[in-house]
Length: 218
Image (cartoon, rainbow, N blue to C red; front, top):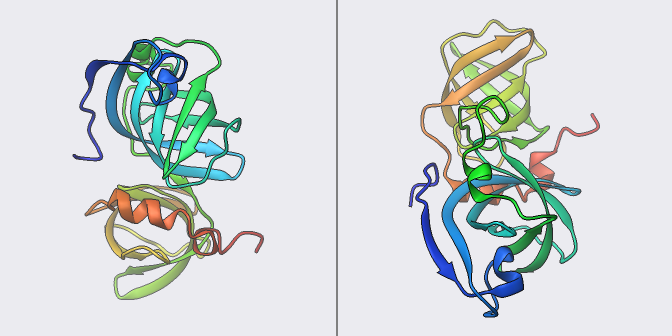
């Protein structure tokens, strides 16, 4: 299964009250939409990469190897820009079920109107503050990571070192990546990786807070 694509399928799932939160109990019949889409969970403890497994009008089931607690409120953000607040109903083995405050049409989440959530899908970005190293034209420059996704990253290069074209970026805890500069504004730069990071690598890295937020408070 490619992490970057949707493969919607519709099927009835007997689950009653908890169907929207993952279909764990057989108390009725609710129609689920299976999507296996990479997204982002935003919680009080931070933001985390996730896989949205299925969605129903009342909630969804999500894979995220971060311990959430029943009753906890989080926001789930889709690649298309849609975002919805949910309440965690159950959580176990790297997966949780969540319900919406009120029923939402599934199509409204998967296909939001252009101009509301944006028309271009993008890979979810994780916030960070650690120091990275950039190799460019035989020189190495330190910089601060601002966010990273499977396909690229944004950095703060306070040294104002001129930089164009291709570079090599080393992020603590992640495999080094060759990247191309896509945009620059003042001392902030955006890079696209030549080879995307795997979901597994990024999901494991996000839990290493001592690496991800090493520069916080400095």
